[in-house]
Image (cartoon, rainbow, N blue to C red; front, side, top):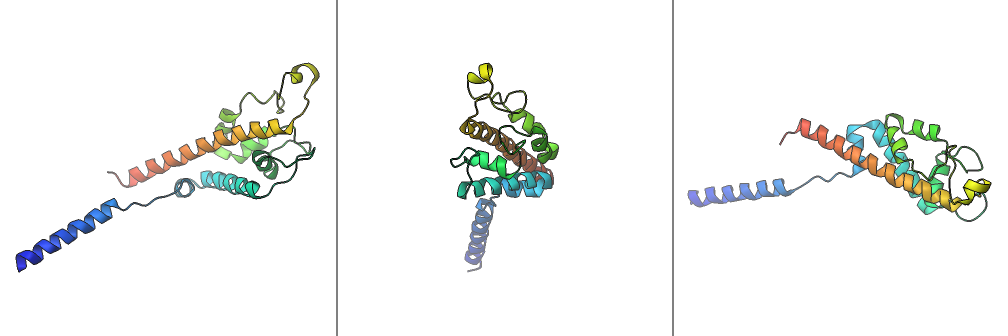
Length: 169
């Protein structure tokens, strides 16, 4: 009887160990950022919450028609240079990214002309900018996709580094 009881305890212990080893704690990227870097967390939280709000409700472009989600994000966060919303205030955007402002430069693509506006077609070369707000939404959408991917990667890498330093395998 003792041998049987011992075997049952051993098997129960193994089953519990298997359960413990198989159970995992799943953190989303925002939680990872919160754990490792308050500035990174703040940037990601602000962007995510604002973008989600823009999916629910957004205003109209200055010329009419409902603004796109990315345009709404930039508008809500005050990243346009003025009320015309034809140019990005890149300095303000870089400030908002704090020590992660290098991502702003890395994600700024060739859709922007030298003064913060947008090249939306060949007519910009000949007669000046004939502004199309949907091109702005597309350009800032590309920027948001790029910068959010970099922030997610940064949060994940910092979390892994901090966790692995504290809990070596």
